[in-house]
Image (cartoon, rainbow, N blue to C red; front, top):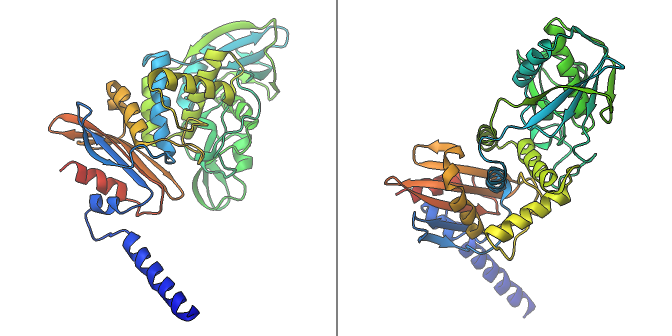
Length: 396
């Protein structure tokens, strides 16, 4: 009896497994319907449903969260907003002081613009650099951010150069910068030790290195321009008697920054914007709790979602939960900015999201010059290109 019962159980379990297994030989849409941990919603220009599966079920959205972060940032600041950084001179010490306000796009080329402005101040020598990064709370922890040296795990900071990452080229017996516009600094040289031969982009590893690396890079560029500056460095509050030299407005607008953030799925930019929103609304220093409050208030006012989870702005966290219907709500509000979405081809503008066993895809489909919104969320293992195959079939 027991043997027969066990055999029946095995046969039944195998039959159930076969019936639930995806049919990868079928069309992508047919296969999607067989996936238990997947959802899809497609609506036309009039918000009428074209395709639907599990549209109210919550899934891990991964980097598609960045579209919501972009939407809230654009509504708060407007597309032409430019982030600022203040530069001061402490007359008592002849230190150049920099106060950061979280500008997410202080890349090497932006520092060249800053150096040109400093040269116009008629100062030929500084005795050191001081940085004030107090606009962000120290040691901010972002759920989902790992401890690897991969760029997607980089720390946030009120003052950071090149997204808190370095690009280095390792040779047989030497190290050089991986970018012609970026001098090799002491921190970059130290972090490069032990890397294999080749070109590597890595993050700084520790949050406190962000302001120091910014100072090192600025000093190197000042030296290249012919200005003299000593190695002295201070990380602390701006002195009360410091005299403002100028306020630097980033050469890129918020619209241009978001275009880059979505195209390259830049986690650093996304969570910088997330934190900056909290600091602007609830005052500095920026904290995750303040930003959580801003996002919750926006969602309540504009979408009235009852059930969702959002703990950061880049999509790193596996705690985040959204539904396909909620992503469609975001996309419908984001339509005036759809040109900022990554262009997959002439008919698909979409943002993807990828984590372990998470594959998401959301954006717009061009149906005879009418743009439909779609949200695809899969929280199980699938072939990498499956989501794009689904989107392509939706065009037919």
